[in-house]
Image: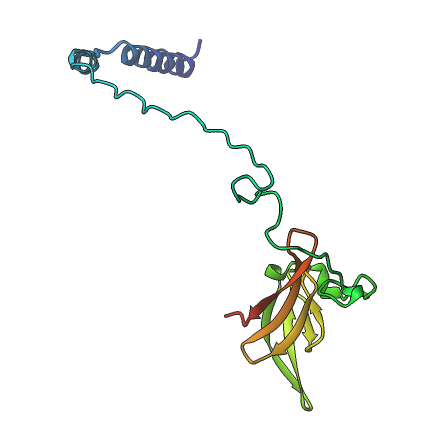
Amino acid sequence: MSAALKIRNGLILLSAMAALTACGSDNDDLDQYINEVKSRPGGRIEPLPEIAPYEVFTYVADAEGVRSPFVPDTPQVATSGKDGGIGPDPDRSREFLEGFPLDTLSMVGTLYIGETMFGLVQTSDGLIHRVVPGNYLGQNDGRISNITESEIELIEIISDGIGGYIERDAAISLSD
């Protein structure tokens, strides 16, 4: 065996012995801490609070004048855009910017061409589009009602949850 190989094997053996010696080192401080923790008096666990039993209430039409929570308190009429009420127009052709959620669109500026002010809207893919009042944005039939230097105002038509629709104001503000 060569001298270099003997030295290398000796170093490996020495390293292994040092590692094994470290594993068997004295753990007196750890044992002392464990004994100290075990000698502490045990704490008292507070009892759980008593839970009152659930009181059942049966909803009956005209039970003591209480309205059922499953029936609207005022008569509701379902409306749609075709019969003259508030609602989306299913026959209207959709515009490109209606394919994006409103929170993914951002206003990046305005542009005057002649007397007409256009709003500049950037989509999530980075493209910029010109819009004017009357155009539609977002997925809730949002029609642009006004464009100012700092925001694009629109009116969205959303479901009221009981078969009808309501109008809601929304806006896209100029991005910083």
